[in-house]
Image 1 (spheres, rainbow, N blue to C red):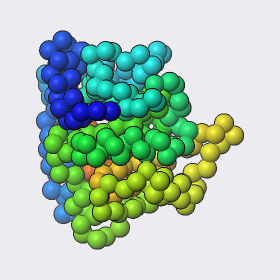
Image 2 (image 1 turned 180 degrees about the vertical axis):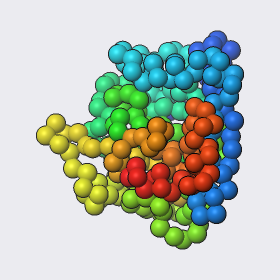
Image 3 (image 1 turned 90 degrees about the vertical axis):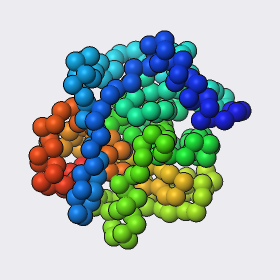
Length: 270
């Protein structure tokens, strides 16, 4: 991959928005000032709901064809070596949300390889942000085709999980954690991943597939979370939830989220 990733992403986004290939979802962002575990929520705006975003998202998650084998040309940012493509998330909630997709079908639930970490880290190095992986439908994955994701810090803003970590207390959910100074190599990150899977009892089954889990990676740390369930009180939660960010289809859950906080939700899911 040559050239600056940020510049490529912005130019591709500009063109894709102009052509209508990129369908950005408008949300209202709220910060919930929980005294123990502050978090953020994004709520679909009335305009987004009017345009049927919830229906289109649900349809995208259940579609039979594989959108990653032949991604829309307008959404293609660049090739990343011989194995991966970098494409825009067609239904992005935050600007410049990237999908790192294997060129050929590889199962989302198979264990990640060192080459997968190498691609993710190269992307994070060029465009700092939160890299994440939803290991299977039970962890919020919408497609069975292997894809890692990256949301740049210039779009996502400060992560609540960074505030949690700064307090020096254990995170309020089952996990394994690794901190580092600067972007690590793929080999040490893979070693952490392998050991975390062992520690959390996530062994491949007879088909070589893992149970559900989420992986989150930044320039400073990595977190792996096992999943017991995908939803909590009707809310679908992927890896971003464990960074302290939730997406709501409407304002109805706000009352109990403000009352109970995010910690019980994350403990139940992990």
